[in-house]
Length: 210
Image (cartoon, rainbow, N blue to C red):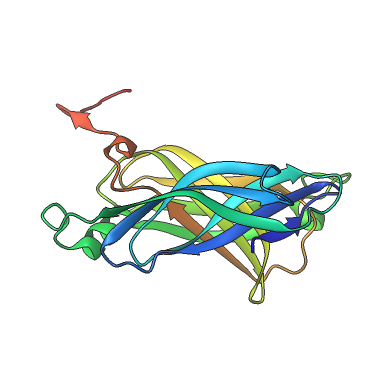
């Protein structure tokens, strides 16, 4: 069953955990968040999950007149793709090398400390990201989780464009809502590193443009 977080009077964030127990297969899925009967779709999308991976799928800032009942996560379609051992003889090493993106200096400032607004609950999140890989990416998605103890109290998403190898960036995000005490922050980069289209490729030392 998905989890529901109220962020404003009539807005909610939704998230659900999925796992891929297979060690040799990538999984692509089409899924929906729904409530009530299957005609009440909140959001439908597509995603991927690597071998032996557990991750969250997010649906953010959805508006409801009242808290949705019988909230569900359903998989519409699923396809499995075996890891080609000729192309990826050491899958774990390939994964580690391509997703070596370092997160640092994460600081969450709640409404009363952020200085962003006195009239609405507007918080601030700051962090740094460093691309420690040898690869340039068109887009990197960061899934962000705020914890109070072991409980997730906030979820968000940030997309960084044209993130180059060995580049470091400082990120600041405004985040609406009122949270209980935030004790920990988790920021997870998400890139389908098996998709050739995610890479900014070079030809003759000049970046190719799409």
